[in-house]
Amino acid sequence: MNEKKNFPDYVPKKTPDTIEDYLRGSSKVYEILTKLPNPKLENFKELLEIFEKFKKESEIHPGSIKEGNVAIGADLDQYYPSDEELIVSEIGKTIERIIRETSREQLLDYLNNMQLNIKKIEFYEIYFRHVDVMGSGRFFYSEKREEKTILDLYKK
Image 1 (tube, helix red, strand yellow):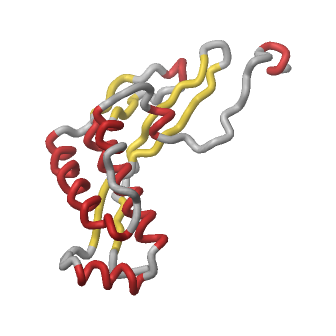
Image 2: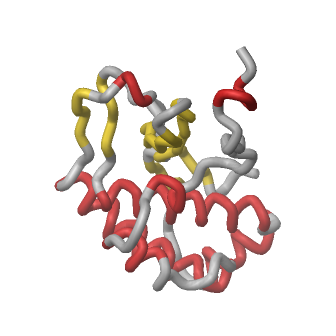
């Protein structure tokens, strides 16, 4: 079968699937994420405070599993995260990036100077995937990692 002949306007997606793909249009998630401070070490404490606030809210408002439309690429039991879970995951990934891009010494100095007595940060990462259904379009789905992401601030 020649896909180009049958679907001449099809263009494969070559970029990673992100929350911007998954969420179309305005939402509570974007309202919060666009107001976050820049992902820099000097904003770590503020990001951590926002992270903790939404982590508590995500425990009160978890996502859910619903019957998925398998014909358009969903899982039979498709996971739909809550807004709070999406926010926690995105902030968690931002914190992880700051930790990765900061030397261990700088991070420990910052934690001591800010009197942050925290050793680990834990969250469930929400990641995204897409399915191209020929003749129907591109569909985006979220998945929740089974294992918690654990960021040990004292190990690098």
